[in-house]
Image (cartoon, rainbow, N blue to C red; front, top):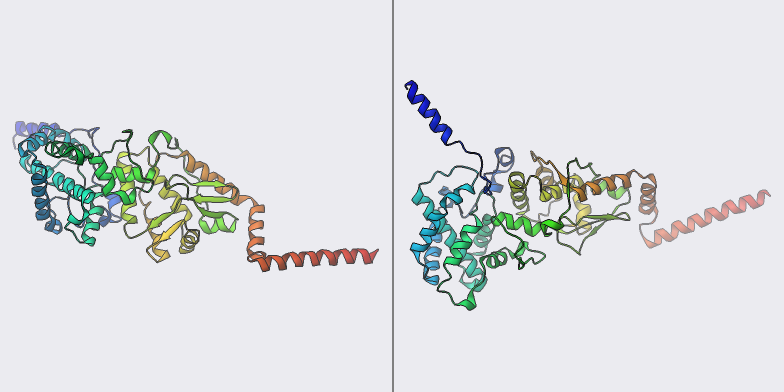
Length: 409
């Protein structure tokens, strides 16, 4: 290579070096996090978007996506020219939403966006208006839903939403609902507090973002403030129980942030631990690591559970208190799940609420009087009969001492 060719080559390389766009919201999970469980970030049934497009094990769904695309066009009578023109007009913005350069030609990318978007729209439409029309078997339907909230398996929400609106021209107005409403309905299982977004005060980047909002519940302005300090490691559930702390499920809130400690009672909203729980939390935490490093509330919650749960015994305590609903069956599996979620996770700030919680729990456990009361309650007051016997024993001892004192006089 000549000197001038070398300089030109270097300049060409420099021209491709651009800082990440502020529109970036869809990420390849960093290797340092992904290596702990690659399967948690990889779709098993259907690829959506460019990151996993063309994967051999996902090819079976490509024909099904085309069938749904065809059904979408027939149902809506949408103009294919208009849809293609729109996608071409936003292609630059679309690319900026991704953390990596996309190795697709212009035409390949347009087709990918159009087919995947139409598949999702038709799937959500059918699920909302007539679930009997869904062609998938239950296991496949569940697999598709789980794949659709994986961080690496996303399309920008604004693109699908616009394609949906462009398709409504020939649809009777009585049947028109916003795409956001259809989306919330499709992922309704995760919407425990029935958020409806009617006020228009919450926007989402993609489906992973929506799932995170469902778990946080609180609007941004009402979430706890953040502090730049390490959370003081609180005792485990077993240690807290030995110190007299009582565990109670918080039935008033479904928000993961609503942990409360008062009067020796720790209240925590119930969490169902099932086969998809690890994947769900890993993707929400990965989104926070990449996109919300200073608002990592899901990561905070994971940290608190990691502190509370060290062993199967800790899991059993939380299950008995109905704080955890263990669908895995094996308590060791639940302990390993939460202990493994925090590997190589970085946190620059923490919720002020959880910071105070850690300090309060540690202070409570350091008070020897609390531990003494817990020991007395555990050893002598387990049942009403044991309590009565203990009181009778104390009275008998007191009377004996009194008699001894009187006889000495």
